[in-house]
Image (tube, rainbow, N blue to C red):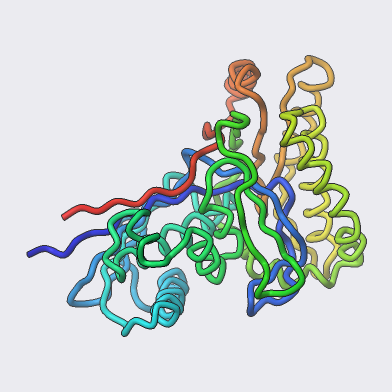
Length: 336
């Protein structure tokens, strides 16, 4: 009889209040709280099944055991075996993204979330969320385990708008939902400026944050910005949230640029598009705001009413983009 295949789909998320810098890298303890919006279309699809030998496929290609991506996944699998007190077994893992990876669109977040969910479900033979709950595995527990593979993966376990709270120590940090997807149907148009892999990974970049002379001032101001963002999310006020998104994104990149040697993910095209987006807003009244993760690509945040006009302008400029919106979180199912 063929082994049951456990299928997990986990979404990427776009941070509004950014996670950059760690208070404890080994414990994946962030230096500050963060807030994010879960996406709907940018997802990682991962299947896990018991097998006669360990195999790892990424976007349809079998990876060798020496591949860095496969090695990172295998380290996380070893961690999950340990957490579940399970004897390591051979697994066949297939994973693919619906969006470009390694270019600043949080593919590690969705990837580690999907890998964690599918693997735990396979090891516990849990075909559904309800079955996991019956076995004492909560969504919060899965988020905590996924965080060990990629910090921001913990925010991908809920839909809508999510918080990751650093708290007073590594053991007390937690991720939790703030508002469901239906609370505010924001759109995210991902402007693809470059899909080339990053020269410096986010994991490496995080380690440099404390070297920036701007980092401690940033940390001191984040609680005030967080409160303002939470108020804007609660009241669905884009005119309040939007400027905070832009300020936060540019501040994060100023930390990267002020270390030695500087880390520069932004390009001349990124800067040109920032100017263009602000011109549309200021001169034409198109209410759209940008945020940027650790890469050159802009996430253009707007409400559904503004989306047609925004897409029209992007088409006129011969831009490339992906359409997304606030999503409902990960899914789990099985097949034979």
